[in-house]
Image (cartoon, rainbow, N blue to C red; front, side, top):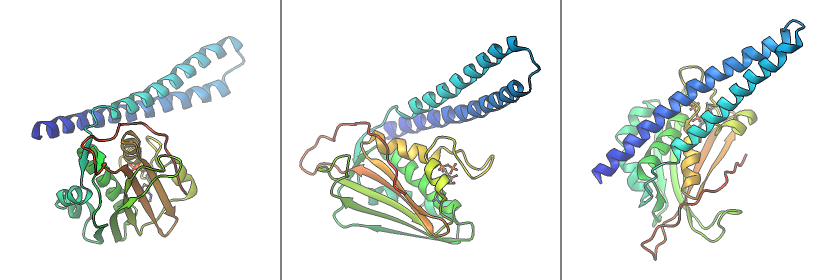
Amino acid sequence: AREDLFQAQKMEAIGQLTGGIAHDFNNLLMAVLGSLEILKKRMPEDPSLVPLLDNAMQGAERGVALVQRMLTYSRKQNLNMTAVGVPQVIADMMELIPRSIGASISFETNFEEALPPVVTDPVQLETAILNLIVNARDAMPDGGSISVRADAVPGLAGLSPDAAFVRISVSDTGEGMDTETLQHATTPFFTTKGVGKGTGLGLSMVQGLAEQSGGRLLIESTKGKGTTVSLVLPAADADADETPANESLPGTRTC
Ligand code: ADP
């Protein structure tokens, strides 16, 4: 199991490295595209140059698409699907959490009794929950409270109405999101945190994990009031030893 954890952490590090490279490449290509667009607009009247610029722009656009695919691919690997207890996962993180959120933010947990285990990658789940907690912290520069709850949900409308799921929700009393932010929150590289502060990869990672596990990510947010991000994951089947198939499902958004 230690080997597995090491391997998973290595894959995570590779994934982060890939994500970092993808991020830098994306920025470079965006700068190239922006410059070419200006050139095209202001170019002196020489029509023979237009196809050259169009070529260059198409190349840069293809580069952007490739970078996005690379990122998706780096995430899709080596999920170690296991049945894990959510309270245990949080308990294992309890040394990390106070250090991550600082003293001006209170933290509480609330788990439904007899909560079934979830089926997902335990190391990725820790990373995902930590991502959500760090986002909650960042939304509360003047302090506030974070609450992590977990409860069983009987089925997911439009997804698997008959299967059992567990919902892990991270709520904060922070600044909330406006409509535009809410709409783009899970898009890779989308961040409102400024250069050097946010990577814009946190929520896209969490959504990737949810979908690869056969669940989904839900975001509810009110500007000025706070945000709840819910990671809904399949519950382990109480009667069977086998874990459910690892299907990929479309993402959703609630506003
Ligand atoms: P990052 O944290 O690096 O910006 P994420 O993908 O985790 O990247 O988040 C994208 C954006 O979504 C953030 O920049 C922020 O605008 C918004 N966001 C995420 N979580 C919250 C939250 N709990 N409260 C308010 N806004 C949030």
